[in-house]
Amino acid sequence: MVLNKFYTIGLFTLLFVFVLVFSGCIPNSDKPKLPRSIGNSSEVLVVLQNQEQWDGQIGQVIRKYLEQEQYGLPQVEPVFKLSHITVANFSELFKKYRNLLIVEIDPSITESKMEVFNDLWAGPQRIFRIKCSNLQAFVEVFEKKEQIIMHSFGEAERARIMEVFNPTSKNNVSEEVIKAFNFNMSVPAGFYLAKSASGFMWIRKEVPAYSQGIIIMSEPYVSEAQFSIESIVARINRDLKQYVPGTSEGSFMMIDETYVLPKAIQVTDFPSEYAIETRGMWNVANDFMGGPFISYSFTDKENENIFTLMGYVYYPNQNKRDLLRQVEAILYSAAPLK
Image 1 (spheres, rainbow, N blue to C red):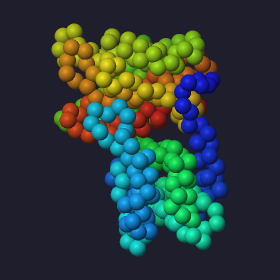
Image 2 (image 1 turned 90 degrees about the vertical axis):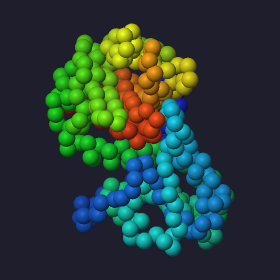
Image 3 (image 1 turned 180 degrees about the vertical axis):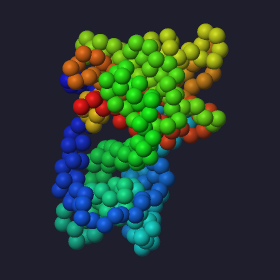
Image 4 (image 1 turned 30 degrees about the horizontal axis):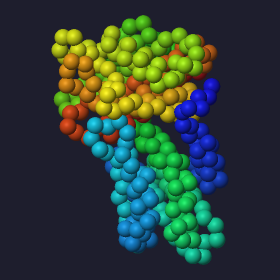
């Protein structure tokens, strides 16, 4: 199914796969074991030829996209945190960074090129190298490819998170998800089943500093109208009001539609191949709690049911991007049973 009113990244995903295949980055089982990659969560290391490139138009266009504000967070946080270094200081240590963007400007280059490498110097690792003859050519290439780059770094971050989570994901909660909804989801240790009802499940992680949650909702699939943002939000609010109470009498969780409007896009790399991603803020009616959420809506293989998976974070007065990216990675692990 295709919803034209949603922005799709399918073309960019296909282009990215094409680049991967023809950039020689298919893993070779004969290669020696690589060292473990380093770097903070959501961090990209930019390698330039000199400081002037970072201070000038090249650095400006990189920051414009990679450091753009992540939508749906109460505090201003960039999609990625950028660090930069010159190629003269690009030692073996820095080659181990998990996310690298390498800039190469050389007048002798006859054709601009973007190369992509996986696990070149460390693992897991995602590297983009852009080679151009001049500054303006770089800007044109980067602006043309920025969605591929951002999508790929986001994909790499989810994979890194799940590499940590997967070893502890064979647990009772994951089994309950399979029994209730007939699909797999890698729910790591620390999350517990808070509530289960017909077509609904609430999975929580509660630690002293913060909370994370996963909510699974399903209902019979009737039409494409159920993929509209209005329908998705109404469906989420209906179940939140019924099953997720707040701490005070008469309070309940709900999607904020006043201060941060929910935003939806179509994604084609979700395990179901087609899904609507929705981002925004949640709050508690008649209370003062709130935070960011992300959700994915999709149908099963037979198109009999529509599922909405919602992940949320509660971490008052603190940055939440990385905790939200963790629940995003868990949602992306949802896959139909084979």
